[in-house]
Length: 120
Image (cartoon, rainbow, N blue to C red; front, side, top):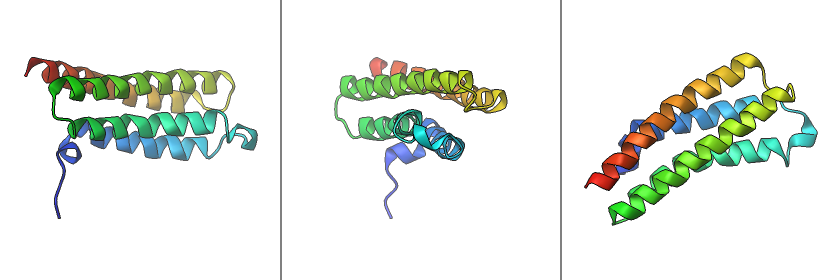
């Protein structure tokens, strides 16, 4: 079976793991948030890894870098929603810390990936 280049990227692997964390944490949110924060947070988390994957399929480095930028934006959007969820007491301080730690690592990797895509 073929392994695609994005599957080898640690940042893709870590963002995929974060999606699982987000799905598990949002499962505990109030039911009336199903179409609000739950949906938004899940879509943002999936968007990070999806844009990394899609970007690897582009031919120009400029296009690849653009998808990395979009993934970075989704990561920041997810952080904002996690902070808001903590403010609303849907997410514990510990869970927010876990998400923030994961996102700090992922955004640093995305920044490095972006810079390498622009250099080539």
